[in-house]
Image (tube, rainbow, N blue to C red; front, side):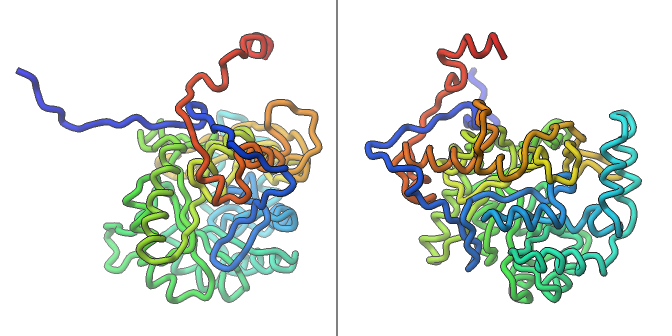
Length: 379
């Protein structure tokens, strides 16, 4: 007797398992438009820097903002716990591998100072760029008014998994429609990986959704908790939710694929899968201007009971401008990321990010190895 299936599994795909099909018409790379919008704010490149302490400080936020992107400052990290976060970041970088997690648990146990929340926002604004900051759901009600009052432009509410419906001991937890109604600035939320969760979040009135659970280089949630969906499939599913929401409401809510990127080709694939922009962590942690001194760690790494991240050494490879725009002599796609986006868009015949989302994709698990035996043997 054949036993019935308890549940059906479907195949999902990551960056290394798919490829883009070139278009029938090509475009000069310098003629494509890479603009990306959150609410009424337009950015000239579809790239955000992750709200991680080893990636973004005030200086990095200003620098990336002036280059056309958006860096998100973590308000739950060392930037708001210490008057001199640079000294603390240097201490984390100096720590041995054996002691670094316990050291971070101690460092991140210091209380957040509300005056530093306002000071960091104001410092970014004084740099003449758009200010985006990140808070965890538990601190959102407390910090959101401070961010708005200090002149913040975008609030990102972020946790490992974010849903529109949450059960907790609190009689009135964080209710997104109420939060959005109370603030004069757009709210972006994350992270999620499914069609239904993304659609639910969009229906609350948010201005953007972050996509990705556990793909980041420094994140260990997939190993510790077993949760996550490979980024191509997660992006495809959430893009489908965006299209349905657009059809139902006429309101376009961008999705931002967050984490798992190594090379320019990964970014191009995310855009073709439906992303409006991407969020990078370890890639930017390698910038000379990054505050982590060549190290990178996840937001969940300092958790007092169940750390779900690890400090990794990514090294310092180039100035931020070179990582984004070149010129570069690197042949592996790790630098001149915007050049890669523009070139791929041109080859695919996509004049805009929206057109890039229509690019044909194929399942191609051999895309990075086919015909590359000499490269692989010499790497």
